[in-house]
Image (tube, rainbow, N blue to C red):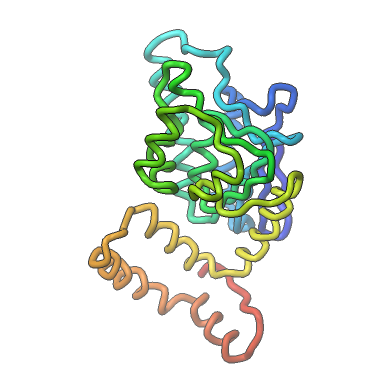
Length: 253
């Protein structure tokens, strides 16, 4: 796995191109370590997740399945849970840049990201019902949130590939770009987000992660969160920058 940090944007690249970047045990643990470190690093403002050499990820490593024992299986699923929660629970925006195939559990990671950029020719692959397994990586939740329960059920039951155009129509992808341009577009969007107030972004993410979609619940939560943000240094800076007609310089405080 490769990581590169530039101007607040961390690019994390799944890097096993000979096998189309499967989420092997080693890759999974490296990704967990990288995302945990990013969460604790104030220099990281936004993270971009992508794959090397024109493929996002071939998903779980079938050659290592099933785990040797049910205890090992439980440990594997626990680590998958940790990985996905590092994406959904991060206070920092997460962007997926998808070229080529994204299969199985990697679609769960992709769907868990805040913004998904898919290149033309990319495909989301859902092999679970063809293999006799349950969709994992939180996919039944994240896919339902993105495209609705009925559409998610159909996609997962049939297990047919979903190309970029269909993904955009369904809401699995947020933006489609020409082949080879997903990473650059993701980095460009990430650069825009580095100019937004970190605490505001974190509050927005927390709000949606908690599933506060009912209007009354939303209003109650807003009352609590906004009360804190009103007195933040970032709001004072944002307000001053607005009246000064300049770009704000946010610190996350």
